[in-house]
Length: 506
Ligand SMILES: Nc1ncnc2c1ncn2[C@@H]1O[C@H](COP(=O)(O)OP(=O)(O)OP(=O)(O)O)[C@@H](O)[C@H]1O
Ligand SMILES: [Mg+2]
Image (cartoon, rainbow, N blue to C red; front, top):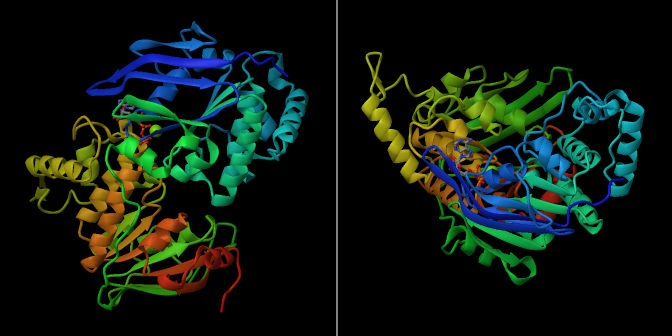
């Protein structure tokens, strides 16, 4: 195994400018050997940018990176890797149709290593055993669950000799079980002297896992604290600069008419395996029906069937009494459905369009944005400015391409668009994933405000606190089936957990 080359890493006075944005402003940050260091900050605070500089993907305008006390220019990821710095991106960079070993070998360049799969496989096995990664070198990547693919990325970084590993929101894509598993691995790595930089919006994860926390706000470093000395509330205040409330207030609503109803919905996937089995439920106006479940138990398919993206094999879907079972997405929108998809970069936005354009996707053909087939640019611009201000979207302007916004800000923009349409029914899949706590507070308030005005909401979330805090009733899915629907008042994490694992309560 490689010698440890990396004892301290320090980023000193880092400044990074993008057109119209000061992404990092004189940032100080340092990591020690064997520590897990959290990087915390609101959406757009500059976390990913700072880490991309450390990994050699971006070049800072000012400031130095010191490795073991010596300033080194890191001009490419290759150079970062040579200094023992690795990074795991949120979107994995693996080739689906290759095995684990082939994927690891692929990144090794031209050297003699390249085709020596035997050696690579042995290294993978050894590392897998040391860190309990449970990765099989001969497995095909496309057969692996998300959590396993992430572990392949970790192995890759370790094989390349990473002493410092940067993880940018690694838990955003994981189930709670996979998160526990990842944390065990990271603790083991730290115990062996590796340094880890961990980015997450979930404060309880930071409290759980890390030794120190550095907080960024608006591109500046607010400070670094020992995790043991702070509470969740302290961290929230540091990052947002004001008190953040974790309590949600749900007002009583009148029992209203059913707006969305599914009856005996069945769906099989491309291999003929049932993914939705006899799903029936109804959502009333003024109600939030939470959908809990471990990811992969039919939630995504359920959302897509309602949104018109997939057609069920049997069963019916109706909205306010009208049969919409075979309606297409545009027809569902016209019928009053808003949909916040889980995969927003894919399904929710067009990356090469501006913020303003993304804010009127699907709506551009209707008034007030167009009249007699002419787009009304003034209206579109005013609307964009209003949405950006209201939802506190951090962007240099409405004409900025959406792909250059930070992840959480893209999310806020989609939410703004979908809620502003004044829907009758809202299907929201993981609406606060990747979003900072200030924005979560705002999104939750919005969902509750629309509920109070009579909106029927189907809320998919893997965050049980979120589900329990917002829902009137909670439906649990397992293996494509509805395991039961509980009144929120009678739901506990234990009951929900049991149902999520496949047992029926009653
Ligand atoms: N390639 C780029 N081109 C232009 N602007 C960018 C680019 N990358 C980031 N930015 C801008 O820099 C700022 C910081 O973005 P960054 O992605 O570092 O935030 P973040 O803290 O990682 O946020 P999030 O929690 O949402 O991921 C944002 O205003 C963003 O729009
Ligand atoms: Mg980021």
